[in-house]
Amino acid sequence: MTTMTLDTMFSPARPAARAATKRRSSVRLTRRGRIVVVVAALVVAFAIGVFVTAAGSVATQSPGTPEPTRIVQVHSGDTLWGIASEVAADGDVRAMMEQIERLNALESSTLRAGQRLVVPAG
Image (cartoon, rainbow, N blue to C red; front, side):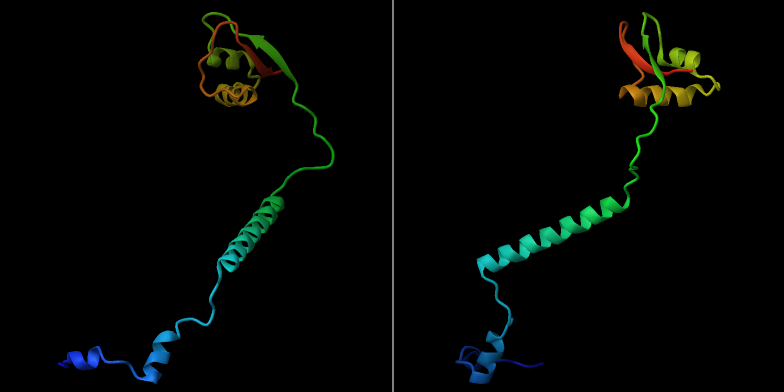
């Protein structure tokens, strides 16, 4: 176990020791320098985001053919299941319900009398 006396602890340090404690970092940024570094980091992050998003694009030069649809007006007592079962040609009512919800941007399967729904034709 070592002990330290107060006279050596609070005495002025030697020049070599003082130089060692002063040398913390060789780079010191001013306020403007910190702003430049932050802006540069944001530009790099934005550029990476643009390239990552552009790489996953599936757009084409020619427009696709729109899905043929028709409008159905909801009457009192109608349900989304009932409308989807009438429209579903292949008998997959759940898939047709999801497609009707997507076409009309419905948040739930609750319908109101008088509401108009876009449904696939055919």
